[in-house]
Structure formats: structure tokens, C-alpha cells
Image (cartoon, rainbow, N blue to C red; front, side, top):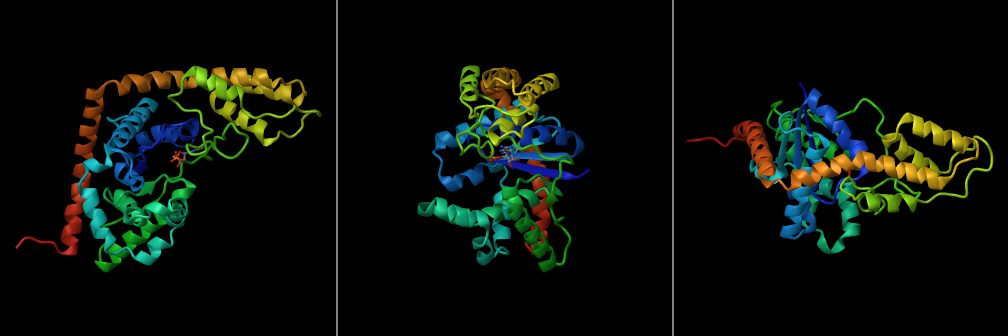
Length: 329
Ligand code: AMP
């Protein structure tokens, strides 16, 4: 069985894009592989969150992922900072990661542009910490979005470099996990690009029905089709893309036909879409609230995850120490 690892930054809440683009697939993936899901709280320190925000963020993501169906009895779910073997491997890998290559990564250059007042060393070595996250379990596969491809390449490079420097094959070269079907991209409600946290155009799993209705009713549309079977403009296609994810086929066909016959009323479409989104999110929202209020359960989950993850991490780090030459007298 292949070992698959995925990390989640504890910032913000999960939106429909995260669910349909990632989490839904993770829920399936956990039954087919040996999966590790971790909350990347060390990574989030690069932006200097307050202690309260850091803790709340970790609790949120954990509760949301559990509510979506990640199962702590099937996969290993843990918090990065509970595993001291990760920073140890990070330190060791930092010795074979070079300043020049780290400075050249696209994400580092982007961060320099976005937060010039806080270009810390953690930001520069972010890909090394990510390599440590992956290699600590000798993972074979990592599901990555486009923005993380370069980081995965860096993890591969570091694994190869370690192996060749110490004449070993201890680290497998991690590859991108392919879900085997085309990934759905959920668009935002503002008629542009994708739904995202920073774009402010998201519908969140934790969102109250009233607020969801309001957002969807305000979504950008146009003045309607004037010819039969006309190609849809992006703003309308976007509503249908979300509908495809949450509604019954019958509903989708009904509104598509209305559009194609120039009989569509966007108000009706949006009302239906809002109800279907709420039908989808409401049970998850209730579950999130229930899990979040049960601190004892959350603690049990992270303790169990930490124990399992440390067992795997210790095996790796013990061997790495031996390979490098740390030995008892
Ligand atoms: P982010 O919240 O941007 O860190 O995204 C975490 C993961 O969720 C990404 O790597 C994607 O797999 C997925 N994701 C985020 N936004 C979308 C979206 N609008 N549509 C589909 N998948 C998304």
C-alpha cells in the first residue's frame, strides 16, 4: 500500500472549493492508501499569528476535516507541532538545501512581493520544512495543487541529494498523487476566477443558511440569453458549475433547458441553487459545531494521531541519524 501525505494550513475556514477540489477526494483516498493528514501549524508561523488565532485555527481545521469525513480510525490525523521528529529532520535537511535554489522558488519571490516587511528565514526554508513533512513518513505520494508543484519538486531533489550523498536509497522520491479523475474547480460568485479564501468570494461549510442565501442572490449574472442554445458567459456557467456539484441532475437539466430556450429567470435559478447548497452544507455545519464543542474528543483524536505519526517518524529519524553518522560510543 502506498503512503500518501497531505498537509493543511490552519488558516481560515473550508469553502466549497476546498471541499469539492480536495477534501472530498481525501475522504475516498484514505480507504485506498496509508494516509497521513496533518495540520501544518509550524508552517503558519511565517505570518506571525497571535497565540489565540493559532489555536483557534488548528481547532477549526481539525473539526472541519473530521466533519467532512476524514476518519481518525482509518487515517493518521495529527498536528505537525506534536511531532518533534519533523523539526529535527528539517534541521538535518537544511544542511543539504542551498540558499540559491530556495531563493529561486516562485512562492518565495511572491512572498517577498506580498510581505516585504516580513521576509523571515522560515519563509525561505519553507520548502525544506515541507520536504521534512513528506520525507518523515517516507511518503510515496502527495496530492498537490498547482501552487505546490515546485515545492514537491524540491522535496524530490532533497531526497535524491540525501540518497546520493550518503549512498543509500532510504528516501523514496515522492510523486504527485493523481485522483484519477479531472479535478473540479469551483468558481467564485463574483464572475471571476476560482473560489478562494483570499478572494473573499467563498461559500463556507460553516456558513449560516441566511448568509449563504444572501451571497448567492447577489452573485453576478447578465441580462439573459437572447438566442436559443447560446454559449453561456462565465458568470452564468459558474452558477451551473456550483449546481453540478450540489444539485440533483433533474434540477440541473431543468435550468439548462430554461437557459437554452431563453426562458431562464436568474432569480429562480439562484433561489434553487441557494437551497441546494444549504442542503449540502447544513449537515456538515451541524457536525462541525458538534465536534468543535467536544474538546475531549478533539484531544483524543490528536493524541491518537500523534502517537501513530511519531511511531512512523521515529523509524525514519533513527535511520537518518544512523546514516548521517550519529552513533553511540
Ligand atoms: P487553499 O485553501 O487555497 O489553501 O486550498 C487548499 C486546497 O483546496 C487546494 O490545494 C485545492 O486542492 C483546493 N481548492 C482550493 N480552492 C479551490 C477551488 N476554488 N476549486 C477547487 N479546488 C480548490
